[in-house]
Image (tube, rainbow, N blue to C red; front, side):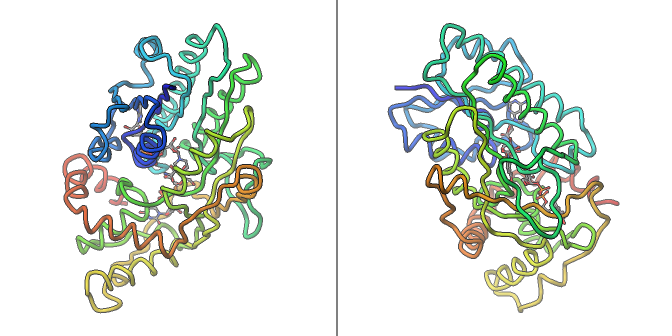
Length: 349
Ligand code: NAD
Ligand code: DAU
């Protein structure tokens, strides 16, 4: 029986990871640590929060003393660290929040783990969940691999790169058993509608403009969130200590192509005349430092750990649209209040 401490479990990816681990490891205790920022939502876990092996602790990873107390209380065997400020546009407006949570928060967690595991690192694991954005931007060809040098371009990716470096340094310096994965763009149920796909779905539902940054010819590699959760569970179970793993969907799409496909699918679902949603597409001012293209070579995950994505973009996007249509109350709840202020300030330009 193990205790697995998952940070950021009330967020988008974290909630899918918590659900998967609770189901897959009913004899282990899963402790979800989350301070519930605007992106954290306990509704994401309402279907499983009464399971006997689940514990929620509202704690901020910026608070080193509280973290030490939690480690003392639960003596976790494993940490799976997802808590972060995760939105690039917000990092451009407010970089310091990203330094505080993503960098300082990660070092706080490393320190608490190191202190709690001081007698032995045997059977312990610190798993840091990171992003492909640490590698910077690709040109028209090529793929990110585990050997790609770091070259972050946004305050968000710089803060994630710094946190990756600290995790690696704790392995080299103190021998802490760590593993890191760098994943491409996720999409699926429970994603906060500041990110491209849920923002477009939400705007189509509300008849609002669909803001496309720059010329729309930026490319991302999309992975269905449940495939990412399965990849994380695979790395947890089979990953080699000290290694990094690139996780991706083999699903490269230009933003404008994706948005056009989404518009057609939404027209179909909402029984609108084909072309209705596309009329909402509006090209807006570009994101500063906008990375042209991301794409992951996920062959190490497949060859060494036997993981590959199950969902195609075609199947994943249909499930995603269905989820948002079936959960309009969820969407309404989180798009009231502070979201409106964020939206008008982000899209006023
Ligand atoms: P999210 O913004 O949806 O969720 C982040 C969660 O962390 C929220 O529940 C929030 O309340 C919590 N959190 C934030 N600051 C905290 C703090 N100081 N203390 C405690 N909890 C805090 O993010 P996400 O999209 O689910 O991303 C999760 C992780 O995966 C992040 O580390 C992100 O960098 C990484 N990642 C995301 C993607 C993606 O496409 N979304 C891709 C690759 C990697
Ligand atoms: O690659 C992994 C990363 O993917 C994660 O580490 C980040 O946490 C996650 O937010 C995501 O970053 P992106 O910046 O790629 O995602 P976002 O959904 O913000 O934007 C996707 C693309 O769509 C990007 O090229 C910017 C563009 N875009 C985005 C928004 C919100 C628009 O054109 N209009 C928009 O309104």
